Length: 525
Image (cartoon, one colour):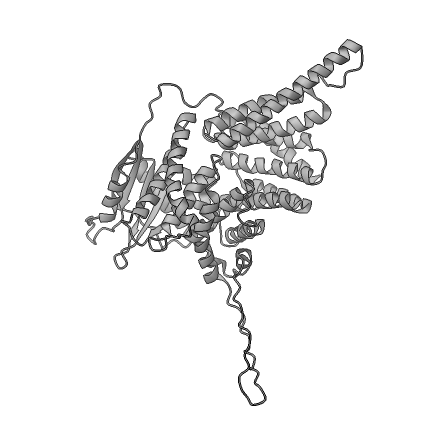
């Protein structure tokens, strides 16, 4: 009952704050003849100024500008100053957020929407690249904000490929309308495809630096947000060694075990023993072995969040790339990190929401209704941490997950979906989400709403409810089409056809009943 009233409160909150919500954005985002403005990005100095404040030659920044100059629909500018994270701030996460906000503000003053910044290591010749843009500054991606792309060979062709991926992700984030999104999805897919085959053949890019792996994984997440999840498995494969290396370093040392005395024969000769086989620890077991949460610094937390996001998306697609236990253990670890180490409410809400998502998907696979109920509880906790007015899209995403978890419980328990609870929550999620800016998320919520209406209407032979489902499937198709999510659009089209067929069958039945003078079984109201 408590869960029911929690969702009722969500519905009332959406009703009374409707006037303050973002626009529905139902109109098409692009019109024929619209001119696409080029993406202007900034490049900060990667070399600090000398003690007098005079800029020093910046070979890394100049090379980066030349490397990215061949990407169409883009233009660059040099910020002319070096930006670094303030190490005097006690909270390392706060220091990272302030650094990103500061450099992004400098870029915005010159009309740039993204900025590359970082530092070079004069001793090793390495290069650390931060990438800041409006997308990473939004609540949906706050956990990925501290991501650092480190390169051992700054001018290697694979380093250039990684930087191309990052800038193409910015182009995809700025794209509006089907044509522009489809174009940027195709470009990003092309960049990832060049590396995917090498990753599947076992290449890890250790000689170039882990920045190639992190940029590839970030690009895979961006594509997954548009419905293209075929790169998630290879992204998991290339980033997992980085995660395991950190988990091995941060794990509590094993307790010392006294070495057993070697047995000897009658004449004290050495007895030949079978050699022990070294076992590889599972990632979920390594996650449980982390004792000191302070070792999870901002950069490592971003890599873990990137890895966890890929795990969740691969589970959504039924790829079974990794077990659900790994994703659940990872998000539990990050939640504890943000809870005990002064994390922001938004960071905690994202981690808890992702934990609920991982548990819900795993519950579907294992048909564990108790786990699905626990997932609903995590979603409700996450909703309690989010300011709906300030973080509308994040609130909509978590509300969508809450309704999906209730549907999952009904599916696992083989009972009817409580439409009176679920439908208002999906509707609330749609009011909080902008279709123009987030068409894929909006389409998923609309498609889920239509699915619940269709299943309920088919069971009760409710013509009105099935008609609403048909209309919602049509709107979901349009949103998926705008997001260039072809697979999801096909699914919405198929559901629309099923609703059409069901309405046709009910209409035929109604005509037969009317002709024979029987009693109608279909609800026309």
